Structure formats: structure tokens, C-alpha cells
Image 1 (cartoon, rainbow, N blue to C red):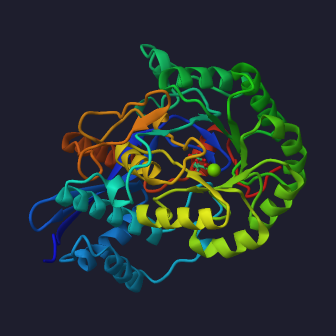
Image 2 (image 1 turned 90 degrees about the horizontal axis):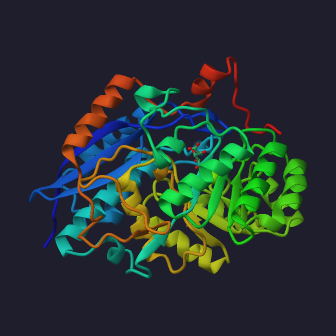
Image 3 (image 1 turned 90 degrees about the vertical axis):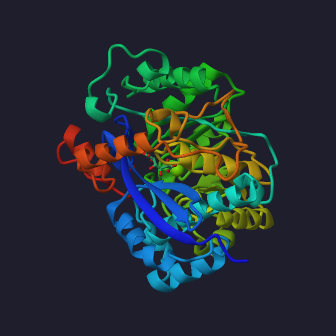
Length: 431
Ligand code: GKR
Ligand code: MG
């Protein structure tokens, strides 16, 4: 018996408060954009997903509406084929040079697949993790994700702060522009969430400052804490070798120090430390060359741009075959994405590295019950059917109005940075 069949689709762009975080491409805007997708079946079941917000991806999603109507949610292979036939294939190079992925089709696959899996889970009364092969762990560990940042809470306050904030909410709005500021941020975040691994977003200041920051973290947390730094590929090969040698004894892994698989392979040969990427090996098309060159040890998957949760499971098999570790990349996000990441993390054969998440930087939520809880740095796998989280329609409406009001249509960290440093330009390789 076929079905349930897709009868309706709602695409809702939202804007969520985001503090002024720095990265290699500039500065986060006061709002990060996300898009919430909801599919409704002919028998009234709703399935949801969340992807990075971008008006051109939303327009493409809108174009896929007619293709999806009447499709059986279980026929994910056919749905993917129909979308590919319509949109054509996408080249890995369309990812772009920015730290985040700019492709359309992979995000559409992900949005549709996750919402369908949510429905399938509801129909079969099983959590999504069971549709991915079953649960290998009850809790999925995440890492503290630190950012250099200007003072500011983001949102309406922008560079202003709320004097009434306490604890992590206060620390989140404080400036962190040097090693002392980052150590304070790390302590506050770890105290609130219980994280046991720490990642610093680098590529912001000249490398000496960032390396000093890593040593300051090492001194503050002691030798047992797994540390990572991610310059988002803006270092030269020589820079990465020099500073990589200096830091290698304190790092768990080095993430995207240089641009492109060739350069990553060159630097990796000179160092005695695992390399991770969410920038040089980001699609199945990139895998053969990655294996040939040896560009990384760990692929930081992201179901939003690897084409969904099932593709990420396929990637995990490839990683196992070729001796790659698999972990997870993140951008600013809310609880629907987090729930999907947790189901995937729970289904992976092994989780050797705590996963990335930006979640502590967000204060809004779009799911019933509000913000997802972390315990000792980990999130428990939702046990309800499907994703195990439900859309809070009032919150969705508020965040959609925030989107309309803020006027942003896509992420552009260069423009935001120019508000602080007039004339600032993104450079694909800086130091
Ligand atoms: O949000 O500034 C940011 C990050 O730099 C993000 O865009 C990256 O995609 O977190 C990401 C990474 O690990 O490269
Ligand atoms: Mg990265």
C-alpha cells in the first residue's frame, strides 16, 4: 500500500538572534537565517526540518513544491532522482570559498529527506535513529565552540548588551578578542553545558595570537582537554607547518589550516597530528582525490550539505573503508537541526570526537518545550517517533516576523565586518 503521500509543503524563513562572532569571512550579523520546512501528508501527518537560511535556496525549494506533491514519503530514492532531474547536478566547486557551504541542491535534499524521515518515524512509531540503522549510544557528546567576538548580544541589541543577563547569557555577550577573553568564554560555556572538548574558531587574527590562545586554553584546562583550532583555510602552507609544529602536542586535531586538498595533504605530511575538514572534502565527488592525496584524517560531515541523514550514513561507510574518522560540522542553528544531528550521531558506528555545535550561541527556539538540554556536554537521543521534536507554531511566527523585519536575505559576513572595520575584505588566504 503506497503512502502516506505529500500533500502540502510550508517553507518558512526565520531570523534568530546571533551575537557578533568573528571568523575568517568577517562577522556574524545580529541575526542568523534558517529556513523551516514542513511537509504535510494526505492523512495530515506533519514532518519538519531546518536548513541554513538563504532566499535563493528558499526559492529553489519553492520550485520543488510541484515535484513533491503526491510523492510517497517512503520513496526517498525516487524523490532524490526527481529533484536531481529537475535541478541538474551540482559541482563541488559551487560550495564557494567562505567557511560555510553555498550549494543549493544538497540543502534541498536534506530539507526534504529529514522532513520525510520525521513522517516515516511517526507512521512507524520509531525514532529517526532507528530508521538510520539503530541506536549505538543514548547520549551524543558535543564540544564547546569558542569564537573571538565583539561585545554584543546580537538581535535587537546588536553590539549592545543586556545588563540583567547572568551566567552564560552574560558571558555570551562579552567581548573576547584575546587569549584572556577566550579562556573566560570557554570557562563560562563549559560550566553551563559541561563540554569536555574545546574548539576555537580561528582565521580571525594573525596566527601568533590564535596559537597563544590555544596555549592559554591548554594552561587553563590542563593537558587532558581535547583542543582543536579551525582557521577556515586562510593560512599559507608555511604558516600552517610552522604553527602546526608548535601546537601539535596540545591539539586533538587541526581543522582546515589551509585551502584545498593538495595543500592540506602537503601540510599533513609535515605534522604528526590528525587533520579534519569541512572545507576541502565536502561531497562524494571529492572523496577519490582525498584518498589519493591523503588530505585529511577526519571528515566533518554535516547532514545539511552532505544531502541528508542517509547520505551521511553512506559517508560513514566510506570513512570506515578508507580509514577516515567521521565527526560533525555546525553552523548557527536551532533545535530541529540539533535533533537531527543527535539522531545521526547516535546511529554512527563510533563517535571518536565530540561533535561541533553552535547551539550555545543561540537563545531562540522553534520547538515545543524550548531549548534542548545538555548534560555533561551531551544531548540525550529523543525517544519519541520521528525527530522527537515538534514545531512551536507561535515561536515560528515570531521568528518569521523577525526575518521580515531584519531585512537580511542571505549570510554576508564581509558586509557585517565593514560596519566595524570600514573597507574590510575577505581573503581566501590571508596569512
Ligand atoms: O559560523 O562563523 C561561523 C563558522 O565559521 C561556520 O560558518 C563554519 O562553517 O563552523 C564552521 C566551520 O567549522 O568551518
Ligand atoms: Mg570548520
